[in-house]
Amino acid sequence: MKIGIAVLGAGRWGVHLIRNFLEHPQARVVAVVDPHPERLAQVRERFELDGDVMLAQDWETIRKKEDIAAVAIATPAATHYPLIADALRQGHHVLTEKPLTLDPAECLELCRLAEQQSRQLMVDHTYLFHPAVERAAQVVQSGRLGALRYGYATRTHLGPVRQDVDALWDLAIHDIAIFNTLLGQTPVQVQATGTVWLQQNPSLIASSGQGLADLVWATLTYPNGVCASIHLCWLNPDKQRRLCVVGDRGTLIFDELLTDAPLTVQQGHFEQTDDSFTPVGLAREVVGIEPGEPLGRVCDRFLTSIIEATPSPVSSGWVGAQLVQILHCLSQSLHQGGVPVTVPPLRIGQDK
Image (cartoon, rainbow, N blue to C red):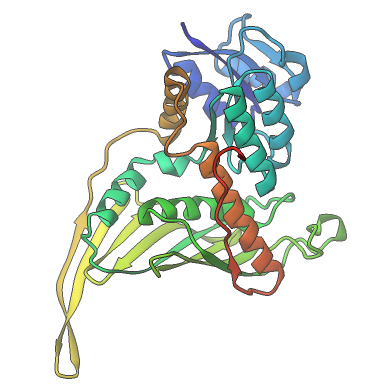
């Protein structure tokens, strides 16, 4: 029996979800929802959908369709909470694009609702299913880098410029998720500073009373003392997608733009003689990774979670809620000029 899937949102990311579920042997796309009729027409033509696949311009039209078992949501973040809550109450499993919501309290409510309904809630944190990230976590946690010192990441490009969230909320969640996975921890303290250049129009001012930051510098401090800094900017034509973890024996480098060798270890350390330090053991190793499309893995794990009635250990709703809480604390720091903010422990599970 194939699992009936409704995809909500047929934009840039939604079409990739549609493609992956159409290709999966355990899924059956039964509906696609998007407010733009031209997108629905393009989806029908592009994927040669038969008449059994319902195309609708709003969720209300299909929400009670009997052959829907699960929904995949690729709509703006501000719409996530009401859509996810209603889908769960209808008895549907939910896969949602990141972030889970924009509010930590709403995230916790949705996680508890999923448990109460005995339904799977999973967040599409695609990088957590990237073969390079999975392999990188093995390298870091094996001790090959020696004693860990710090981490740094850069995520820049010329656009797209969002009008609903700043560069922090748009970009940082990827690198936070990767650092958490590589270190096997979540940060206990965060700091952020930012600069606004483009959107100072009052109609685009954030609820904090400040504009939408185009440039953000974020720092995460982990329980083991490792600090990770992240550079985020959406008006920098120097496109970068690079993340590193530095130890006293080597540095792990994940450079997504180097498609032939995205994951490497740069080895090397110092030998000290009196007051001098000499670099030794310098070598570069390309770390092999398994082939596979990350989003395809996301869709497969979502279906597996439904079939096995087991939450995803990699990207459950609780993982998504933790990341939203970290972003919320970073926003607090950003809007207070960069003061350190403690990240409170997440109250996982239903209230007793």
